[in-house]
Image (cartoon, rainbow, N blue to C red; front, side, top):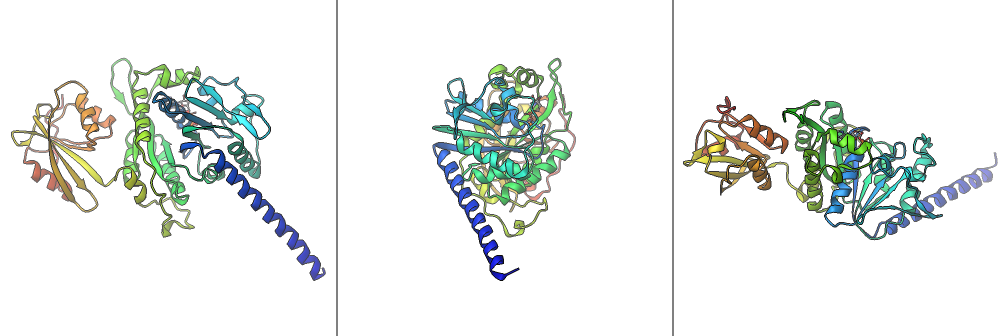
Length: 433
Ligand code: ADP
């Protein structure tokens, strides 16, 4: 081989690479331009399929719509687009011309776009090769004309592989991600991977959602934790990312989504609908902050150990900051939770044991179900209590408020100091009726 040939050949392929990089850059700029009229872009991720990612994305979009927000819902799950089915839009097809696709309007405030709208048939299995997948995702982001939106909710492909990676990289200024999980250990391992994925991309985690978290029997009202419960909240706490809430297993979700009528509009009084509303509230309150910088220990690493994502927790709430409520009667911990006159609310920084407060609040009237809501509204996440009825305890569990029962009556200052020092002793629940 003559040396000139070699160089010439290398030069051409080098030019090819340059050209491809230039066109990719132009595409990314076009995508940024296309999405520039959108206030907030939120990715919905999950470690694996089947955990309810699309259900959460669809209901979140609908709830935001009910709050008079202009919302777009983008289903970019190229292998299993399920948004058309969930919203009863299976026969809808995207309109537009070349390089311009118009989303489908649902009611006044929601626009929907799904890869499913571009397929000839809903049951067609799509086989895309690697580079094609990237091309399709890119094309899709570039060509859909959303117009002005307050929120774009993106139902991303499941997992932490190339496809969600393409989506996260192409939507460059996303506010952050919501990670959906179910309570089983296997799903929780995937949550770690998802959080790691977000950290590597400097994509803030808006919060973790635990779906299929317990089942409330429609006949007797008893709660059964079929897949366990509370693992998502625990994992979020351990990994220092915010927790947005849990959604119970609800047969109404299956019936509604199989019929193409989303729960948000179908069963507004149900526990699951209330859970979606709470999650949507958390999203509305979220203020995007500085993207988390990629820490040294994560660069190039592929392990699943995740360390605190401080900048994200700073923007929402610090997971180390506990708000601890102690029910008080006669200046001491009330032996019976329901008989307390006041609540002493302390702040405890678990990282350094620093205590603030107390804030003394008069207990609200003794109405069923009121206290868990009231304490939740005061951002309480731990209750130190003497005895507590099992129903009240269950309601606090549902709100992800930890209850320490069986603590003997003492002055609140002594109790909170023991709690902060990790030496608080609890015993039998003396009021388990
Ligand atoms: P993913 O997007 O993660 O693959 P989907 O949102 O498509 O999951 O949900 C999978 C199935 O589970 C759907 O049939 C949906 O109706 C059902 N489902 C999701 N969440 C719940 C829930 N909390 N209770 C009952 N069924 C649910």
